Length: 109
Image (cartoon, rainbow, N blue to C red):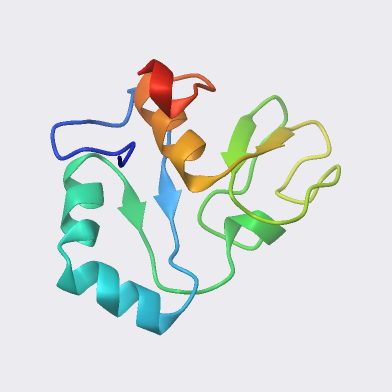
């Protein structure tokens, strides 16, 4: 079951930035209507590229900000400020957390 349902919305205290891994995945998500579902829920959908997970663009964290990310690496300062916090998860937990406004298991929505 998908954590991000058509009737779900990103919590007002959250930013949800989604960058599909490859052009092929982006096109498949577009074809299946998933990009529209995510955007209608309050997500920012970007191109398949590197970005916030390496502190590049589209969501660099400031001191005191927290992120739950589906990237494969985590170390102090990777996504911006050395005083930010980054938690790694799978996509279902990240989506459920965006809806709940806090880190949450999708089964507990």
